[in-house]
Image 1 (cartoon, helix red, strand yellow):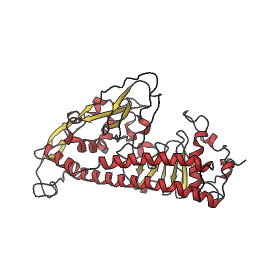
Image 2 (tube, helix red, strand yellow):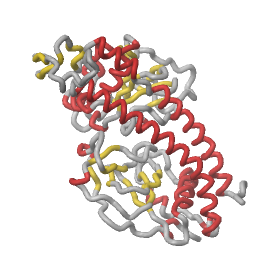
Image 3 (cartoon, one colour):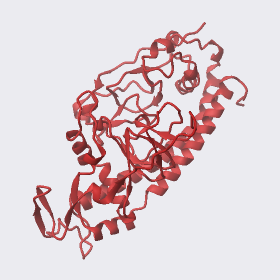
Image 4 (tube, one colour):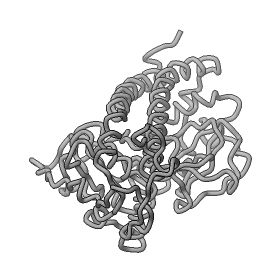
Length: 388
């Protein structure tokens, strides 16, 4: 018998866990936790923390049973994670896919508890392929993962670009003036806003989110005891990207469900310091723990989406949430957030910025690639499909 605990080796270097309250939306050192299948959860600043450099390795979510293959410097998130690395008899990429395969055999898989105690005792004797064949299996599966990662990088770069433009136009107020030059940097007139307690461009007003968004009240009525519709709850909400990349299908979400349309704007209402917000790239259902909205006027979409995922909104949500152990921001409270607004500039921003369709297409392609990879995985591990 060969058990997992017999083949894993100790990870060298700092393994300090970083509390979620210290996570940032952007930074120079990634935080890897057990939440979601996105490798990067959030960021911290490199000057504040020492990274783990004994790479590559595998991160195992003790509660979620999610595996992540990591080959870049990172720090551990606050929630329970285990760092795994096999001995020299195993190709680490193959070992990662092997763990992905045997995941379904982990006892008590869906219960919220620590699972590493089960994982380390699991027998992997039947998958003891020679090293050369391990690498062949890993290569086949890696081709699919590489395409998935390529799509993710395109999406990430698009997000960075539109967030930077949003920041220039609506935070720094350096939108193009009538001469095409940055407004504030070229001494555009600014006036004091008593509502926002800061200077805003002359001719701009102050709006609330409730002026641009309406709550999703499209209640879903369950016909029978079960459904098989893609359902979004807090566990699959994005916190490292503005686009939802995961979905659930379960009959365990209760009856507080709402119909979700493609491109609905979503915000994690529970524990808003987790920084969960974005848009839906597909139709489905959403639970009551996720606040969902639709724009009143289409030309506001890009502006209001970028506003909803901005740090200032998360800070507002945290300061206006209620409760201590499980703080919650009410939908009406979130919609009271105020900001500077100019319709003409917002319309121009919406016209020149096109990203959600491209990101959505890449996400949907990735979902098909994941389905293909997950179909191939057991075939390769069980020898039903051979690699020449």
